[in-house]
Amino acid sequence: MATVLYIEDNLANRKLVQLLIARRSDLELISAETGREGLCLAHTYLPDIILLDISLPDIQGDQVLKQLRDNSQTSQIPVIAISGDGIEETRLRFPEFQAYLEKPVDIQMFYDTIDALLDKVA
Image (tube, rainbow, N blue to C red):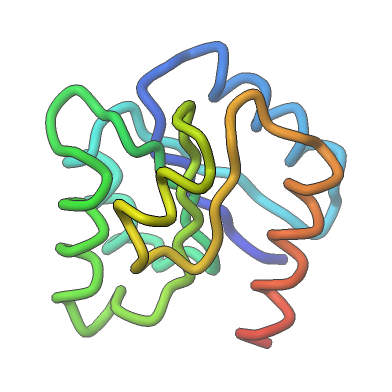
């Protein structure tokens, strides 16, 4: 079973992803409301994939990603940016992410993106 960490401050967005992950017997979700909490969970659980909101209340998503990459335990975990910004704008501002999803999340693209990244790490 693959573990997905979702770092997102918006409760409605977390609930949506929780429902999407619950549809899959091969995925398990853990979630965090803040960047600091997400970093702590990432170091504790070493998830297979991280879904990361760009705009968080305490630390911006790019700074969370930088801290993940600077730590040897978490540096290779694929991180998917999830943003309300346009995808192209996000890609230009944050080229370090392995993938990008735009809010509201397209369900099929969500699953396809996770599956593609899990295939790469398997």
